[in-house]
Length: 331
Image 1 (cartoon, helix red, strand yellow):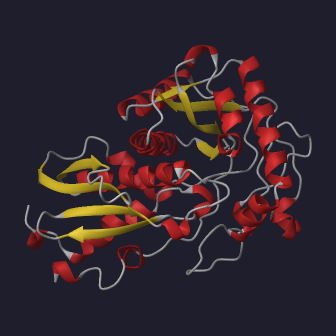
Image 2 (cartoon, rainbow, N blue to C red):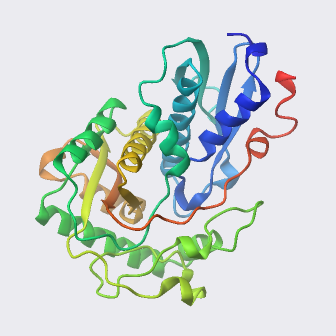
């Protein structure tokens, strides 16, 4: 494929699809660049959009970028091209996390529902119905993670209680840590195209029965957003993990997470991420000791179920994500 085959509208659609991905605190810590000679999109870390206190290792940043990479791959396939993906392609450029080259023509995408779902996917931090997910859906979610080299397991009730307790402890630590609490609050504000982050209406209520430790994002500054409500008695939790814990594994975990979320969206299943315990090394280590995954490294804890659709969060435009004069290479 030559650069002349990539039109401006197609490039804009591809990058818009990528930035529709979820990211921790909606930081959107990525930037894109088109290499016209090879028709390759580079995805780089936007370190200035990282969370220095909450995510000092950059693990959550890599997961976020991995989600964007998956969306980009889905978009490329949707337009009839083979997405040729490389993770961490240049060791001397550590901020270059991935490249996706538009390869030769491919048959029509076998998963058109994923392209549709990526535009509709939203985090829903609201209470879910007391309705279990069908086994067939849970199996499909696990297969989605496996397709990206990750494991998705459903803990037993006793394990679920342990995971909720770890999350509760992490939330208490985050609230008591002034640096982390301040950093979290900084990303909750009214829609702002420059700063982005999370509008107060997206943070969701708190569980007044304290069964589910939802992150408050410091949103006590917005009392209306935190009207307490009862959450489900027995939440359905899923643990996404990898066998190794390197930067490439974090990127793979992000791609697996987004594929799981898109499949869930296609089935009308809502999801929110309980990331708090992953932010404390000792608590994260305990999460990886579940009987079925002793070798695995926990990367994210998902809560899934049937419930209200979450409100949208602001997104950067394709031109903003591509930087200065982003489309000149295709003109």
